[in-house]
Length: 473
Image (cartoon, rainbow, N blue to C red):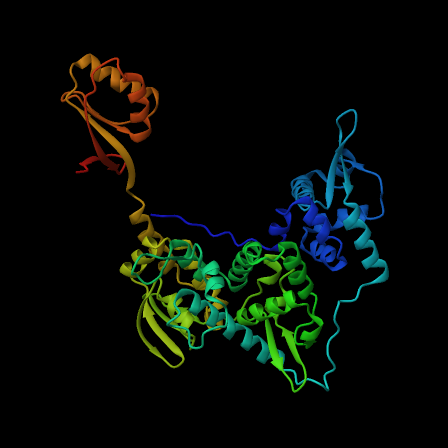
């Protein structure tokens, strides 16, 4: 069974992978420095503030004395992260002792921000000029926009109202999630199935990562884009900001973010403005900080019946990935988790743990407080169904027979054992099966020295005790 893992990197993972020159360009902005500081582990924040006004390198041994012995692993993780982000630079003296010094660009701008404070390039518009939606309405809008985008992402026919995202940009988002074949409708890949089961914040990180990765192809500097997105996270949720204060590049980004639900754009008689949602203001937070628990909607019974109290078409499509949907009502989806529906999910690359995790994270408030929120027998059965498919392992192999003599046969067996690639042998009939890797090595050794036995490409599989060999025609 295929095992696919999508890594939803956050901003700081992308920042860490940028060249040194672009990082220094980013650190020219005090708000970016603060966003970097926010993202660090607690011990990393302590080190930055402790060394913020130290202009000479601090030895590695001295820093190790700042923590207790049982905190050394956290110390190492924090130091590694600071070095990756180029907040700390490593230096070595004549005795080759390692020291750390804070990045001067980062140090200078963070000092200014902490001492003098900082002002965003734009201020909120007065409330008497614009009519602001309530925070609750804004959150509902953000989730609706995000669901609409996801529906269009997996199938343009299912989206109730198509977004304004260009087809070329939509293909960028679909890259790796959808497969395209001649004269066939696009289909979800194994990664695509797993993407739909991810938490909303994790999905957002994945999409934003793809958006930034493709920026160079659109003629946009990735560092400028990251800088604007991180700056956007310092705006106040629910406040209105004048679009006229944006550059042309930032204005085009705002339009894309509006389609994703990160901001809401409104038009007045004379001016237009954008209102950041929680999705935007969470961008500079770490994954764990931004993944707050949302109200669930799924109830699973011990008889494997499933009731989802939702009117969302996206929820219905996600549940259909691993459950059999029987019927849908205006605010209720009824189905069951069956062996067939689970097998279908496993074949598409979804794991049992992902299904169970999704059901637990989206458990209805009535059952969310129970331990476990999903019945144990359901969890165990889903895992057992997955284990049924993992009992058999396929290995590309070669089948050898009709050896010219027993000496040649035994020599071949010894050579295969030497490379740890002998899968099966029959001494009486002088037949053997070896892995494809060993077959190529045996060819090199035998070439021109002894006659080859007849070979047939086969698929070999077994359950640990019983061996089966199938000849591939």
